[in-house]
Length: 258
Figure 1 (spheres, rainbow, N blue to C red):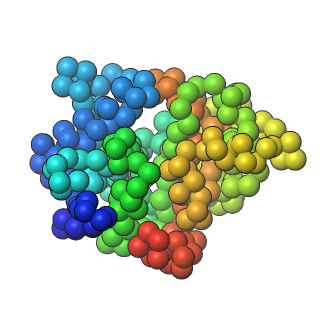
Figure 2 (figure 1 turned 60 degrees about the vertical axis):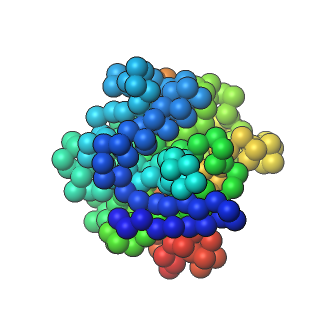
């Protein structure tokens, strides 16, 4: 991927696919800071000595990195897994948590998004916008029809999240043709409260900004949550049909519109 400069005032970002071990390790170090140190995640392949968050899928994916060129520091990461790569990897990461059959049998080009994170100093500004612009170019280049991937609430107490999980279930559930299902559905569903009992404002405050961004683009959630004790998160599976992206969202994120 060609390096693209994207400016925000005096700050200049660039987006590219990692090509060297140094770039890969920079991505994995950021993931370590966010997922391991900040959120308390773990994993059999996490390298604590070198502060690298890694797993068995890393050799097969494209690692999209956002660099702050003032410091030459990677401040944003996306992990991208296309169908051809997933065959080599023996499947998708999300398949460990969700039954992906509706997506994989759709006959459409799919792309799994994962390990999305921003450095703490890059949050709340335009960094996510620029990362999304880079993603939009990748989507167009590979003619992707459907995006999917797990997104996380911090913590494993699903009861504490009954408001936002129920709101997502009632208002943003994927249509049957795209409705992946949690492999923990029997024990950790999302319809924990009737819709008329949800405090919508309070519930939305608990929804992470990344999930809100997908919803603004027209995204859905699959059925059921998944409690990931190893990662110290409660996950939902987000699904986005790129044909649903509105013209307004396309202008905001530089994504293809319907």
